[in-house]
Length: 183
Image (cartoon, rainbow, N blue to C red; front, side, top):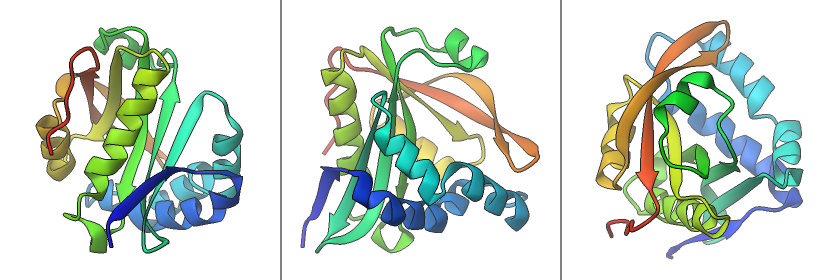
């Protein structure tokens, strides 16, 4: 069964929270504690958080499914970055943030990430962005390879709070002016 990606709606908040809870730790470096991950999930990836995200007109959330079962999700935040390091690093305006893109591990390699990225880039372009940026942990080489292959360029660094500790992220940016994502 092929992977289908659709815009999430308010009814999807519980499913999105479950997928987020199952996938967030995959992007964390080994030194991040279970307590820090749990704190982040409860404060940023809970059902209530996703209800707010889905109601926010400055956000688009996508859900990937295979045979109606969730396999991953992505979130785009439209508008100027709030982080000062990101504002300095990102050169394309207007911009959108690829805030989240996570896939359940048993679906890695099935094209789900690519399909979610296509949906995110498409919604950013339709909203008038000329660039998309994201942060990825400096130790997450798998994600860095994926984004580089998709045409993103590393443009800076930022800090990312997980629990009570800041982690170091790279900032990547993609030009939407003439981008064609690889198949």
